[in-house]
Length: 170
Figure 1 (tube, rainbow, N blue to C red):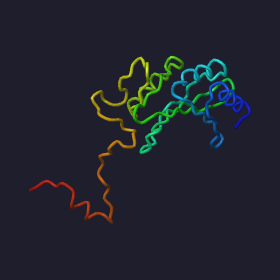
Figure 2 (figure 1 turned 135 degrees about the horizontal axis):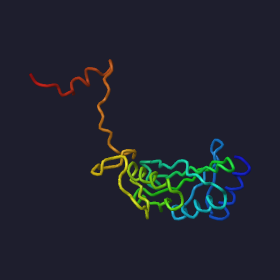
Figure 3 (figure 1 turned 45 degrees about the vertical axis):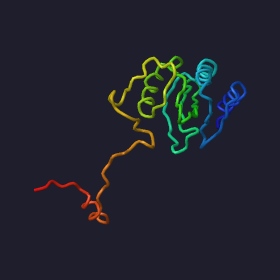
C-alpha cells in the first residue's frame, strides 16, 4: 500500500474505529452503515477524495450476516489515490444511509443497487426503480434470484433434454 494511503487508513482507524486491510495492493476499509456518511464527508473534505468513481454491492448468499457489502470506490484525483470502502449489510434488513448528499452521482448508483440488489438507502430523494420496469418482482443480481433458463443441449445430454422439450402436437 502506498505511504499516503496508509496514513489515510490509519487516520480513519483512529478517528472512526474502522477496520482496514490490504488486498493485492488495494486498500479496503470496512465501515459500519451508520458511519458511512460521516466517513465519506471526512474523506471528501479533509483528504481530497473528490470523486465517487464506482458504487456497487456484493451478495454473499447463503450467508445472512452480513449478506451484502455495499462498496464505494473513491478516487483522489489531486493525490492520485484510490480507496475502497465496504459497508457490511444484514440480509434481513438491508439498509444504508444515502450518500447522495455527499456525492451527487451516488443518487443514480444507489438507485441501481436498490433495483438490482434490494438494498435500501435511508433518506434517498428518489428511490424508484431505474433499470427494471416498476412492476418487476425481485432483484436480479441477488444470488437467490431464479434464473429461469433452458438447459443447453449438448451431444452427451441430447436425448435427456429432447424428452423434456415441449414440441407442438400435429
